Amino acid sequence: MATATAGGPAAPGTPPPARPRGGNGKSVLGTRPRMAGLFLLPALVLLGALLVYPIAYSAYRSLFDASGSGFVGLDNFVEIFSDAGILTAVRNNLIWVVVAPAVSTALGLIYAVLTERVRWGTAFKLIVFMPMAISMLAAGIIFRLVYEQDPDRGVANAVWVGVHDTFAKASAYPGAHPLPTSGLAASGGGAFTTKSAVRPGERTMLPLVGVKAGTMPEDAAGAKAAEPADGKITGTVWLDFTKGGGGEPGVIDSGEKALAGIEVEAVKDGKVVATTEAGEDGTYALPADKAEGAELRLPASNFEEQYNGVDWLGPSLVTPAIIGSYVWMWAGFAMVLIAAGLAGVPRELLEAARVDGANEWQVFRKITVPLLAPVLAVVLVTLMINVLKIFDLVFILAPGPTQSDANVLALQLFLSSFGGAADQGVGSAIAVLLLLFVVPVMIFNMRRIRRERRR
Image (tube, rainbow, N blue to C red; front, side, top):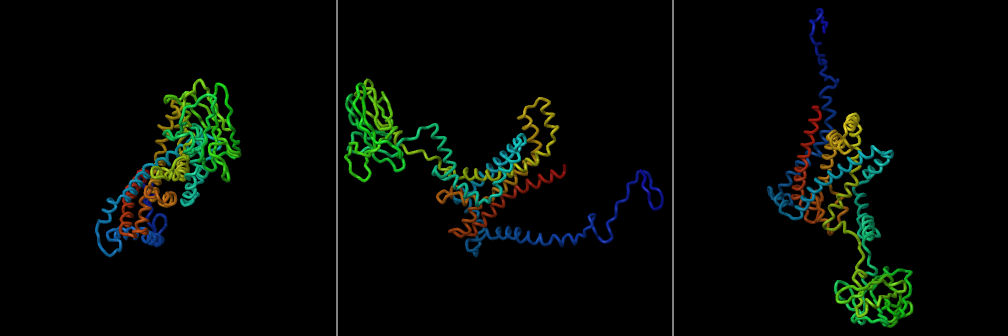
C-alpha cells in the first residue's frame, strides 16, 4: 500500500505516520494528565483516609498494650495463637472460607443450569435471589426463629419432628408413673412391672399419675373398670387423679380419665409372651393361655419424653446452622452471576457434544463447567472475601451460651476491642491477621484478572 506525503507519493509499503500528540499536552482521549489527576484526587484522599490510614494505624496499634502506652512488640500476636477462644475463631473462619463459598457457588451453578430448562426459570431466579435484599441483621432474626428449639415455633424442628414421628412412634404419656402404693414398680429403663403375677378372672388395675399438662387429650374418655372375661386377663389403665382433689387412690373415681393407647406387655421368664393396647375407655385384655402366670409390664416407650428435634444452635451444630443461613442468602447471588456467564456459552459447542454422543452429565462436566471457570472463580473469590469478614450473622444468630463455639475473627475483634477486656492492642492484632488472610485471595484475584486481559 502506498502512503502520500507532503513531498510526493510515498514509497510502497510505508506505514502511515502516527498521529502526533496535540500541542496542548492532551492524551489520545483528549484529557490532560493533570486534569485527570485533579479529578482522581478526591477519590484518592477518601481511599487514604478510609483504607490506607486505618490499615497502617491498626498495624501500629497492634504493637502496643491495651492502654496504647506500652510497646509490647509481637506479644499481641502471640496471645492470639495461645488463647483458646481466639483459636476457635480462627478455626471457624477456616471452616467458613472452605465450606460457605464452595456450597453457595455449587448451588448457584446447579440453579443456573437447571433454570435454563424450565419455563418458569425467571420466577425461580427471582425467588432465590430475593434473600439478597434482606440485611444480615434481618436474616439473623429470621433464622433465629427458624432454628427455635420448640417444634411449635421453630420451622426447622417442626419439619424434623414431623419426619421423625412419621417413622418412630411417639410416646403416649411422657412423664407418667405409678404411685408407690400401687401394684406397679420400676423395673429398669423407664418401664414399670406388676409386683405379682396375674391370673385369669382377676382384674389387674394399673393406675398412673404424673401425666404432664397438655399431654392428656381434651376428648379423653372416662375410665371404665374392666369386666372379667373367660380366657382373658383384663384390667384398666387410667389417670388416677381427680380435679379439685378427693378420690381414693387405686380406685376409678368419677371424672378420672382413661389412658388410651398405653401398651401393656405380658412378660414371663424375661420374655414378652403377649402384648396389647388400652382401648378408649382404658381397658385392656390379654389371652390367658399366654399371659397366665406372667407379670404385666408397661414398657418405657409409653413414658419417654416427646422428641423435640435437634438443638440447631447448640455447641456442635451452631456453626453449620449459621453457614446454612448464609448459603440461603448468597446462593442467589452466585446463581445470577453464573447464569449471566452461562448465557455467553456458545450453544453450538453443547449441541456438537450431544451429537457426538455425550450425555447431559458429560456435557455439564466436560464443557459447561470449564467454559464457566472464569465466572466460577469470580464468584468463589468474592464469597471468600465476604465470609472472612462475616460478623453480624454470627452475632445475631448464636445464643450467648454457644457464641464462643460459633466465634469468628471479625466478632472476636469486636469483643476484644470493645467487650469486657477492652484490649484494642489484641483487637488490632486480629485486624492485621484478617488482612493477612485476605491478601492471598486478593493476589489470586488480581493475577486472574491479568490473565483474563491477556487473552
